[in-house]
Image (cartoon, rainbow, N blue to C red):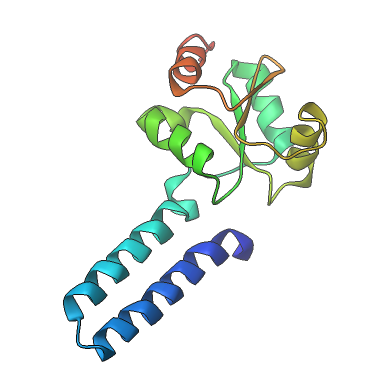
Length: 146
């Protein structure tokens, strides 16, 4: 769990240091802007923006039962964030597997991506799709059995 929060924590710390430097130089307005930018980046890169991750084996089991897609992702991935944000509320209906927290999920992604951990990788009916468009994922979600 701590690994997922490392980048957001570092972003907030760096933003605080930059803001402190700006204040010491007599630019409180710039300090506020820098701090807000870093806090926003930390929020976007935090686990808060993604639905709760489950293990790969559990996600595969649930997907087999109801047909919902499984999304393999990792914190800090801009393509994962873009997919999550563009899916909006519908993203909560998908099964999300954090490959940094689940070795079986990382192995599944490496298996279909020539040994690379390329994310987002979306499995629909057991078939992998690497970095698919949000409209396609939404279409797959709407055609699932649930």
